[in-house]
Length: 269
Image (tube, rainbow, N blue to C red; front, side):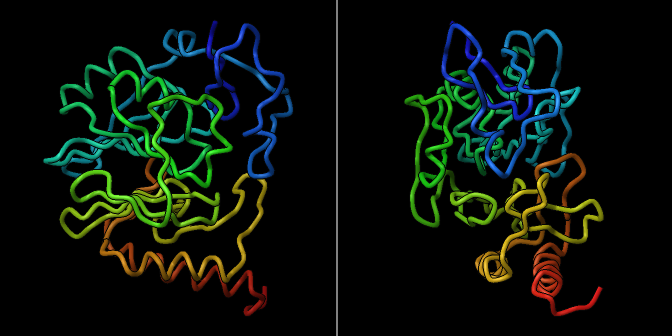
């Protein structure tokens, strides 16, 4: 039986003879059901209609993204380290060309995902490369396709490879995570737990981006304070051209201060 994929969020479901009656990921207040209604596809169909594009963001850091866009439109990041490669976040399309490119780059030692909106076809990826898929246990209820390759971690920090540690930041989801990469000046891989904004000078913080549900200022201050303890100069976000290549720690502090001032009513429109 097929594993159906929601066309709106690109999350893959457990096998079934017919498409699921609804998508809990889209029906959650952080996402939405499109006006045209819920639609479904499969990985096999996507392999016929889409291809993945690659972009080198920095030494040992690559972005991979389906073309045309799928679901929410996020990219995945491949980080190369001496101890193995990590795929950060996940995309729905996995095909032979993508597998060959990743193997040429050294394969994968693990996969880690920031939050449920990017779970996509994570089980296909974990099985294809024979590696664990790291998810925070606080978001376990959002897993639509259980599998032994899923590795649930708890608490606030989880090392996954030398120089790469996951941190639970919360905010967007209870288990919302970022990855800290200690190479060079250090970098955060933020998904949209910390949303790099189009000006590439600021970050956004929301419970729901499409539905415009803000986070409380106290929560944003906590998130920013947690990140301030980490060493980093760059932040790489979830979408194409959403990265702050230098000065990211100052940008995060500045963005949190601006957000809290506006949401907390400390400035006048």
